[in-house]
Each structure stands twice: as C-alpha cells, then as structure tokens.
Length: 419
Ligand SMILES: [Zn+2]
Image (cartoon, rainbow, N blue to C red):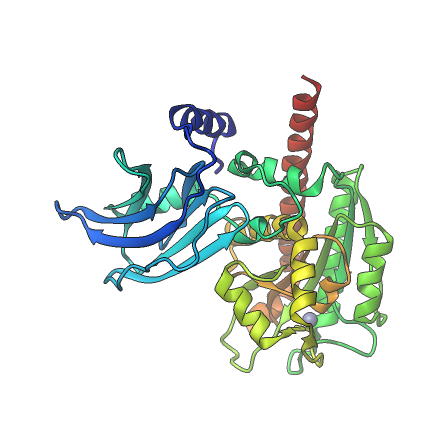
C-alpha cells in the first residue's frame, strides 16, 4: 500500500504554511530529549527541547515496533544533548544526525503497540512526539501503509535533499536515479562449471543447476512479456564465470538491475525458506558502525573470504550508491512479497549486505536465495519444473511491477516538468 502522494504533499504544504518559522536565521540547538509517561496513562510523550524553530518534521512507523521521527533543519546542532532515561516498553533508541537535520529511531519491545504522532509545543520551540496505546490490528495496518525513513538517504552532503520528495516512494526513486530508464536487466545464475555451489548428495542436486534453470525461466518471462526490456545473462549454460566478471558484465551492459540467483544450504536439514539480499551498507547508524568496525564486506559465495574495505571506501560507496540502494531495497521487498503471497514460501527476510558479486556492478542489485538445497523437501521443490516455474514467475512479477511503478513515476516527473 502507498500513501497518496497528493495528500502527503498537501499536508506538507499546509504544515509549512501553518508553521512557517518567523526567524529562519535562528540556529536551533537540540539541548535535551526527555521522555515521560502521560498523566492520563494513555502512553508516553517524548519532548525534543529545541532552542529555535525547525523547518518541519515527519513521523513514520514502518514496522509495528519501530517509530521513526525526522526533524528537518539543516542548521540544527545536536552536539551534547541530554538523553532520555531508560524506559520500560522501549527497547532502544538510536539517533541520526545528518545534513538535513536530526532523526531518531525508537525501537519498542515486542507486542508493545504504541501509535505515534508529533506536534509542535504551542508555547515553546519544542517538538512533542506523542506515543499512544493502541492495538495490534491498528498498528499493523499503520505499518503496512508507512515507508521507512532511510537514514542513508540523508548522508550525501553533496546533493540537495528536498524532503518533500521523500514522501512517496516513486518520487524518491526518480530523485535518486535522475530519470534513468529501466530497461536492461542482468540475470546471474550463481556458480557453474567447476563450481557447483551447494550440493545435496543424497538427492544428487546441485545449486548451480537450480540457479541456472530458474535464471533462464525468469529471463524467458521477461523477454516474452516485457518486449522493451533487454535481458543479459552472465551465463546460459554450465560454465564457470568468476565473480569479478559477473559484475563487469553488468557494468558493461549498463544494466539497470542485477539479479543474482542462488540456493541456500545449512547444516540443519530442517532450515527452509527464502532470503533476499540487496546491495547496500547499513540501514541504521549502528549497523553502519558495526560494518565499519568489522571492516569487511561479507562475500556470501561459497569459499569466498571477507572483502576488506577501508572506512573511506565504505563512505564513498555509500554516497555513490544511495540511489541504487533505495531501488535495490524496493525490488528486494517486492520479490519477498511475491514469494510469500503467490509462491507461498516461508520468508526468512530481506537483508542488506555488501556482496562481492554486486560490489562491482554499479547498478541496483539483489541476490536471491530460493530455498535450502540441504532441506530434502525444499530441494525437491526447487529441482521440480513446478517449483521452478512458481519461483521464476514470482521473481518476474516483482520485476514487472517494479518497472511499471518506475515508468509511472518517470511519466509523472515529465508531466510535472512540462507544466
Ligand atoms: Zn550460491
């Protein structure tokens, strides 16, 4: 589900009109964040103690247990503010100072259903984040209709960020991709040749064969139903292509999307389900910190070691790829949706990883683990014509839906610029 962009823009406009700060020059400083239980027992109020008015703010609750708030004010300082005391029902709080202002992630405990909205304090420059008791139904519905505030979108100081564009995912993609077309798709069947990938010996099945069969089917569906899209394969038979070469194929083809197809394996034969990785670094500041600390980018391929990157390289990568990361994440979640709903697979989630196969491709990319070859039931499903057809058509539908969404947003952008 998507929010209606018109409504969102209207709301933003109203907000600006109603609350146009009279002293734009004053530089707001965040002195303190406090958190109190509401007097009437209906929830909590988080207060942002600011010394001057900020431009605007936004609240989102993209997951039942995650409340996000972004305060827009490029001049805002938040150097040594006082943090709120620990509170029951709130698991963790993360702060995101960025060139556009200041953001916060509030992680609630499991099965704590609080609904958030924010408003300026009538008498002071403070902002109030109201968290009111609610129920699972309402919060889940709210989460379904909400978009993540992606902090990495605010990390690129070189680009002017117009936050009104971040209210709709379509506009966001346009901003980030600068109107590129979406018509070359690189399909990468994992492994091949002397590298069979994961193996199920008792069933005589190899990951490389399953990946190739599904990859060819996805490509055939695209060629049949999306005639304006060009499909490039990294391999079409059982040959070995090394990881560097796969990325180079995507780069040379000027691919708009790199889809790498794999099957999983685990020592536990019960493990099953799909996993989708998207090109990227870190959703939250703390995750970015972890990656920097580890100083490595995990290479998921069998036998590959971690790839060493310096802090500097990570930062450059993050900044250069903000647009690609957003698109990769969107497509990954659309594939995950298709797997869960149409293909009835168990989802092990959409995850972010810096993958060597994707690292070299300067294109949005996803890596799909179709299921576990180590699980006999799932292995037979993935090896069957039936299973491969379902999995491939789920991937195809997600790509088709994404392209439709993308093309729509380009047309809207063109219309808007012609007016
Ligand atoms: Zn693999």
